[in-house]
Image (cartoon, rainbow, N blue to C red; front, side, top):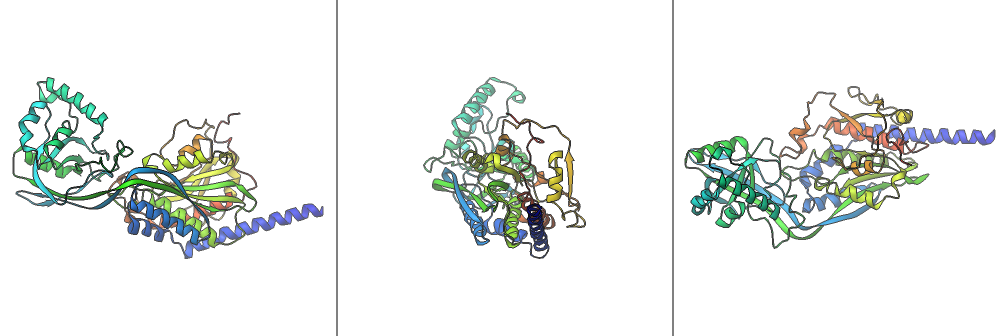
Length: 496
C-alpha cells in the first residue's frame, strides 16, 4: 500500500512538473516570443541560401551557435559536398528603344551571370538549320528570345539536352509548314553560344520562379561552368519585346547579372540540436525543417517559416526550466531539401537503429499559417489531447483542436514524397503533422510565393508564426513525457 502511494505521489509530482513547464512555455510565448527575430536574421541578414553558398554556411553556424547559447547539445553533421559553390550578387536589366523600361527577371542558381554590364540588340531564335545559317552573322553580341515558358529550371546545357535538341532540329528541318514545327526552346543553343550571343531570354509567368541547374550541378567543375546567362523575363515584358523584334523595331536590352562561382568541393551540413531525455534518453521526439532556400528572394517563407519556429521552440523549452523531458528532443535543420531531401535522407540512413524508437517526427514546410490542431488515429487520441491541454484557450481567435482520424492504416510509402518527413515515413516512423490554418483571414496563397522572387520576410504572418512556436513546443514537450511511445498501428499496417 505504501509502495503504491509512493508511485502515485511520484507520478503526480512528475505530471505537475510537466504541466508547470508547459504553462511556462505559454507564458514565454505571450511575453517574450522571438520567432520573428529569428526569421529577420535568417532572411534579412543572411538571405537566400542554397547549399554550396556562403549564405548557407553562415546560416549553418548561426543556427548552431544559437542552439549552443541556449544550452542544447549541438551536432553539425556533414551530409555531402558540391563540386563548385555559388553566390548570387545584384542583378539589373533595362530595355531601350522608343520607350525605356526597367526589366523584371530572374536567373536560376548555378547559372551564369554577365561579363559586367552588357548591352545588345534582340533576335528571335532560329527554328531550322536554314534559319540559323541566315542569321548566324547577326548573333554575336545579341540577346536571343527563346521559346517555351519558364518552369524555374534553366535550359539544359548537358549532353543529354543537346541530344534532344538535335533530334528536334532534324525533325523541323524536314517540315515545310512552320506551324507544324516543334517549339523546343533553344534549339541551336550550342551553336548560338559559339556564335557569341550575350544570353538567352525566356518568358516567365509572374511571380517569377527560379530554382537551380539540377541537371548539371553535380558534374560541374570550376574549369567547366555555365557561360551564357539564362534569363527568365516577366511574361508581359517578354511579349512586348518579342512583338517589337517581330516588327523589326529598334530595341536594345542591357543586363548586369552578378552570379558568382567558387572552387569546390563545398561541403554542406545538417544542424541537430538535442535536449537529452532524463528517463529514456534513447527514445526520441523530433521536429524538423529545411535550412536551405532558393536565392532569388530571401527564403523568408520557404523555409524560414519552419526554421524560425523550430529555433524558438528549442529556446522556450530551455528557458522554461524543469528537470528536462523524459525522452530526447531533437530539433533538426536539414540541408539540401530543395536539392532532393538530402539532409533528412542522410540522417535516416545513418540512424536506422533509432527509427523504431522515434515517437513522432514533426515536419514544418508549408508556409506561415497557424499550427492550430492535430488529426490523429483513435489509439493516439487520448494521449494527444493530454499533450495539448491549455492550447485550446491560448489564442481566443485561433482555437487549437484535436480530432480523430478515421482513415484505415496504410503500408508505409515506398517512394519519397515532397518534404523531409518522407524518408521517416518510408521507414514506418510516425509523421503526424500539425494542421495549418488561416483562421484570421489573411488569404495566404503559398503557391504565389513558393520558389519565387516573392519569398521574403514580409510575406510571413507574425501572429501565426509566434502562435505556432508555442503550440508546437508545448505538444512536443508533452509527447516526450508520455508513459509510452506513440503507437504506430493506427497509422501503418505493421509488417511482421
